[in-house]
Each structure stands twice: as structure tokens, then as C-alpha cells.
Image (cartoon, rainbow, N blue to C red; front, top):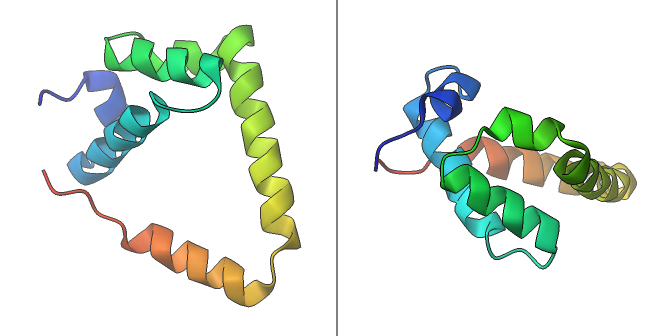
Length: 95
């Protein structure tokens, strides 16, 4: 699949990271939150990820979701945090 230039730019030219971003957008297209679903589907259809994330409609939802994640992350014990960080670093999406 052709990678939009903006996604590749966000990934700093790393095609593996760009593919992972796209994979995440595909997963978010089935999210429980209607605004997150809509945003990811719009981006997958060609809308600007940066513009969508910066908009008041979608940006607020993304900010709230990140806030919930960060609150949970902050309460994790250090061992669990390390596990999640290592798992995140090891994820690669085949092209």
C-alpha cells in the first residue's frame, strides 16, 4: 500500500515506523469512541493526521485518551513499565 507522504514525514522517513502508524490507524478505525473512529478513518482516506489531531474535535479526544493512559502508566510499578517500554521498542511491522 502507498504510504502518504505526511505519515512518512511524521515517522522521520522510517518506513517501518510509518507502517506501524498506519497499522495503529487501522486498529483505531474500530475504536469504541466514535470521534477516534471517525478521525482514523478520515486519515486513512487521505486527510491530514496533523490537522485532525490538532482540531478541537479530535484533538480533545486524543488528549483525553492520552491523559487516561498517562494516569494508568504513572501508577504502574517500575517492572511493568519496563516490560511495556521494551515491548513497544521491539514492535516492527513487516512491509
